[in-house]
Length: 207
Image (cartoon, rainbow, N blue to C red):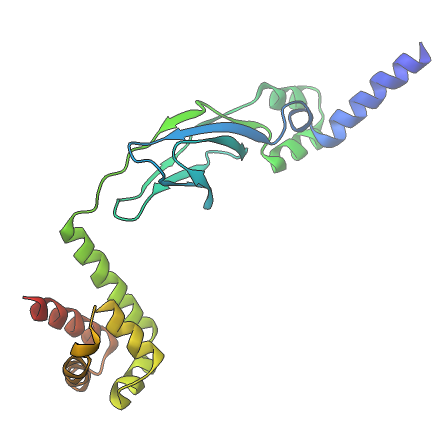
């Protein structure tokens, strides 16, 4: 009888100190994700966990964020609904606040509901690609303006080479392109106006 009492007391202490949900249901849960595009990246709470179609264990958390992405397609992000496990309320009713704290910190009190998802993504249009390229070029110029200004004047440097790559300037076009970019820099000393003028020149030079 004493051994049985000790056994039950030990179990109670274990549940209280480590959390009911953490012990009984764990901190991982199965997730299945499919899409209209195969081999698209599956990003769960900011971390890549596989590609579509995906089936595997993921860490439990409250309303995790799922993103499906692939080059040439618009990424799609959804917030997955979760429900609170009944063991969470057992902890509260039993007054096991340590167990509640543990279950809360590990995410074990949350369960995905449902566990299966279909997230479709759609191709990026040509106009969208142009907008994306413009943003990339503007950001690069803004972040590296001081280095670019020096390298454009001397006609060489890593930042300048990267800018020419982003502009899709070939080796044969380098000399004439650098001449135009240097002219734009002399006419636009501010970062924003220079980046805008470079993109405008890029568009007109393609026509």
